Image (tube, rainbow, N blue to C red; front, side, top):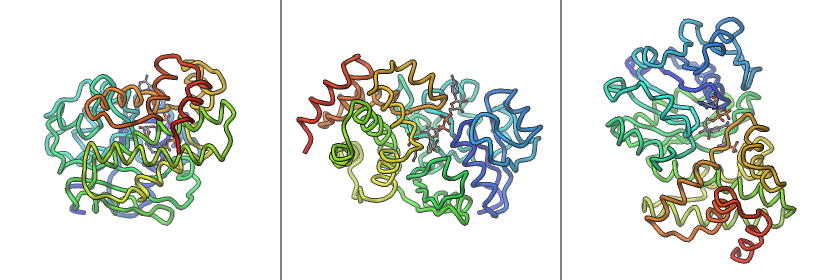
Length: 335
Ligand SMILES: NC(=O)C1=CN([C@@H]2O[C@H](COP(=O)(O)OP(=O)(O)OC[C@H]3O[C@@H](n4cnc5c(N)ncnc54)[C@H](O)[C@@H]3O)[C@@H](O)[C@H]2O)C=CC1
Ligand SMILES: O=C(CO)COP(=O)(O)O
């Protein structure tokens, strides 16, 4: 990577941002890392102790204290590449003071797996429409990868998708480590939408578990989910893609089966009878699928793809329908 692109700002203070800081600093390609965290007290804790007190607190933060701050505008001015990593529901709020001029000449990489509420736009589209960002200056990081396993240095694979193959390859080279391998792709839409949908399917899986279905049913649900996902991404962005690749099927599998999955955990609580608010309070982490299903329900009005799993989750979370009876109805439609 040319020197011009070696100043990287990570935006967000959650688990995945912390894991991304670890990957970037464990990788030996020369670079300078900056980190934006919303909360000044958290910044102060990182300055003093070199750990994020709230998420993945065992990870040692090897970023100079002077580069960690809650002043986003100033940090953006210093960076070449901005890695966005706040949940989609809070992205507009995080960027409230940022103008298209602030992003001028910068590359933006999104590690967010969500849709911007109200706008109903995936992150690439949102930045393109609101900040005039070109898809050639944009990349997405996705794939089956839980922050908790990165902290444990368990072998993981990420896909970097961009309109610019050089940006994808250069950013991938900044992440590769002993425990992290990268794959590059040009499918921004498919990669983003697959990541959004798998969160909804993980909620569905969690709800089914919560209401008492077993592993046999879960396997059928997930095999229907990958077909539903394929129908949708093919309708939105019809290019040749192999849905069995890690960024699509792999991401769905990890979220559907891992003990670390936020979305599945959230769904499980809903299935057991928690309200949305009590499940959210109990988690202290964000289940993107909760916000995404509302957006997807809207976006799909334009495409009319058959999405019975998305619709069942929408009915449970937004129309207060009974998880048990919605899942019973859904079960009739699966094969
Ligand atoms: N955790 C993971 O393993 C992975 C997460 N992602 C994606 O990364 C993005 C960030 O998620 P995580 O790091 O998992 O989040 P998290 O659930 O670990 O942390 C929640 C984050 O949301 C912030 N937050 C909570 N309430 C807020 C509010 N009212 N206003 C502004 N910010 C608020 C918190 O400060 C924290 O940074 C999501 O889009 C997620 O889908 C992607 C791959 C893996
Ligand atoms: O996207 C993720 C893993 O690839 C994280 O989301 P979950 O925690 O819901 O699985």
